[in-house]
Each structure stands twice: as structure tokens, then as C-alpha cells.
Amino acid sequence: MHRLALVAAFCFAATPSLAQMVTISPQQIGEIFCISRLGNDMAPVQVLLTTELTAAIAEAEMKNDAIQKAHPDEKPPLGDGIPWQAFPDYAAECKVGAVTLEADRAVVDIAYGFPDYPDADFTDHLQLILVAQPNLGEPLWRIENLAYATDGDLRSVLLSAFAN
Image 1 (cartoon, one colour):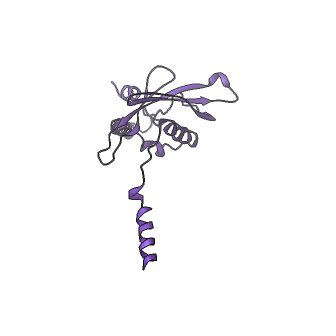
Image 2: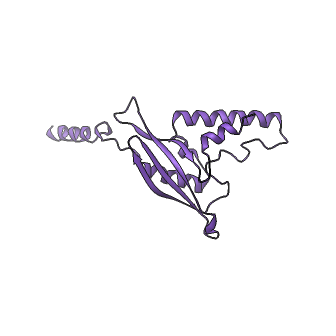
Image 3: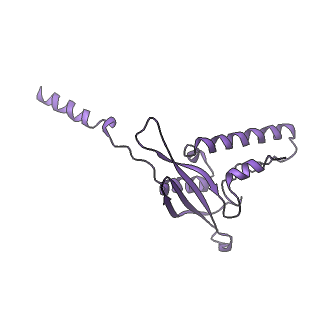
């Protein structure tokens, strides 16, 4: 009987409900972003976006789809997809650079590399913010925007693509 009590106590102590939550750091979000860019699959990143950025992307995609349906022979504003980086060319390298933390904000440098054309290398900047999670004890880092190596940022491009 003591063995059963000992096993039950051990199982109870090892349950996930007692485990300490570990949040994803800005550095790790940058790494996930780079893996997604190199793999041309942004699905893992989409769960790391703020609600507002997710809504802005959904609205832009909806408008893009409407334009595509109305003018099937023309390329719509987002014909190449969501502009997740400053330049549409596929970069063979993507690395996380400097990470700057300031209160509830972080900037993560995303460095794109072209080994055969190093003059084409550029660095974009993920802009992160801590977002409160009502069901969790601590806020989580989320991508609020993406500042391009050139002028502009993702949110601005999404808005201007459909401004008439």
C-alpha cells in the first residue's frame, strides 16, 4: 500500500499543472521567423503575431482576394504574398542579429544573406511587444510589426497597397 501511495505522490508531483511555464524569448522568435522565411512557410510565425497585426493581414488578404476575383487577368497588390521582408528575392541565409530590449518592447534584427552577392545583404527588424495573457500569469512576446531595411514597414505596406 505504501508503494501505491508513493507512486501516486510521484505522479502528482510530475504533472504538467505544477510545471513552471517557459515563455519564448525575442531571440527565439527571431529564430522561428528565420526558419519560416528560409522554409517559405510562415504558418509558425502567424501564431506569434499580435491580434492587431493578424487582423491587418487578414483584411489585406480579403481585399487582395476581392481584387483578384474582379480582375482575374491582373496581378493584385499582394500577388507575391504578404511582404515578410524588404525585398522579395529569396535569401539563402537568415540569421538573428542584435536583440534590443526596452521595457515591454523588443527589436530583433533579422539579417538576410546572399552568399554569391554579399552586396545584396540586408537587415530587417522585428518589432515585438509583451502582450498580457488573461489566462496566464505572465505576458508573452508577440510580433507587432516588421520594419524593413528600406523605408517603411509591414503595416504601412498593407495599408498603402489598397489606398486609392
